Image 1 (cartoon, rainbow, N blue to C red):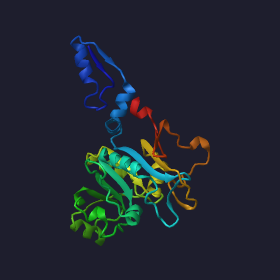
Image 2: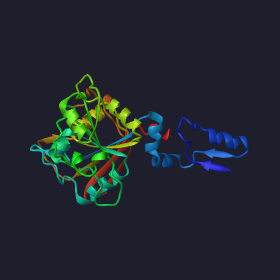
Image 3: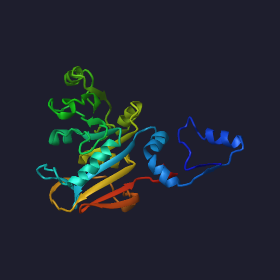
Image 4: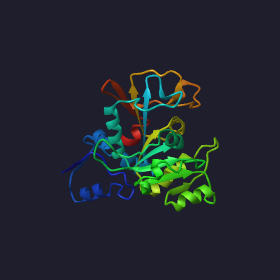
Length: 273
């Protein structure tokens, strides 16, 4: 007798192993702890079923939904233990993505620190290719793990200059609203065998992914503070009625040192179904 939680969603497998076992008279029971097993393999399942990376949005914000002050100060909105959780998350994903405004404002390394773990690929959305020459993501030892997506064409002087430095750039199109074409970016990442993506900001990037319904999981790290006027974590989603609102499923709420961590899925059935 063989007991398994869930079949392999790989289309090249397509239940063939189960059929072979049954053909040889072996009893096969499917579905034991299906939900738990699906969550353990959520990245693989989504990649196999959709052909794009599993997309997890990670938002660190204040109680009133701000990711930075009006002047752009955002460092230490969340505490040290929450920061360790973020770095653990990074180590579990193939790539981490931010927009160019985050690179310019924070100059992040986007590496794994505070614990042992692998460094993810660093994906930068830079539509006009204005990344500073001294940005850490294109000047440190991990430059070979940085990929910049831009709408600037390959014959642009800036494109050529960065390419000569060994920086990987990929030219993609724009949407009707003028933003980088995110589905096109995801398709390119899939060809690079990047199966999971942690999106870390900023507000315009979060808004674009949510407006496009292009995410599987979202986690809010909510600090017990109120900033007032500042930079919103999520901007206008063009929602005019509550029926259109994005509602999360299978929500989990944790507390890390007086900070709330709320995690949910956009379509839980797409993973466990």
